[in-house]
Image (cartoon, rainbow, N blue to C red; front, top):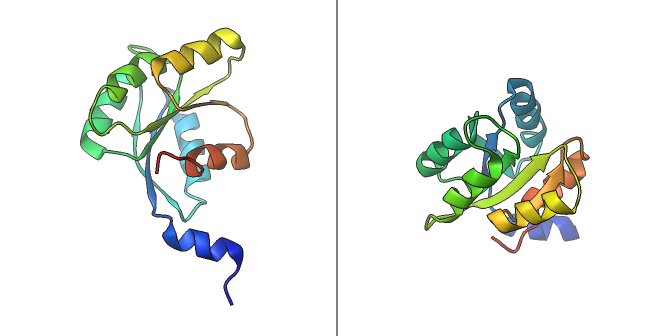
Length: 134
């Protein structure tokens, strides 16, 4: 007998995720959290916006989980450049900042969602898995 959840999971494919953050411990923590899901494969990591653009071109992720504030190129600048490509992935911006200015900035640069760093595992997973993008 199938449960309601098993029927929906049959049709869901594994999502390839790229993690972008300048802090190695944050990348490692995100990797460990995301790898708890059987529906996600972390395909790579990047250390700043420039690296994210290069990795996105090579790895073609379905989703990018990207820090907002990084050296060399921030998450919004990288998002704008990545979204200008033909195979633009869903981009979720992570930040410790909040407020209307941040919300507007993230929306204007083309990211689908803004998630606060320190949000629950369930919140992050819902942001990645529950999308009309797929």
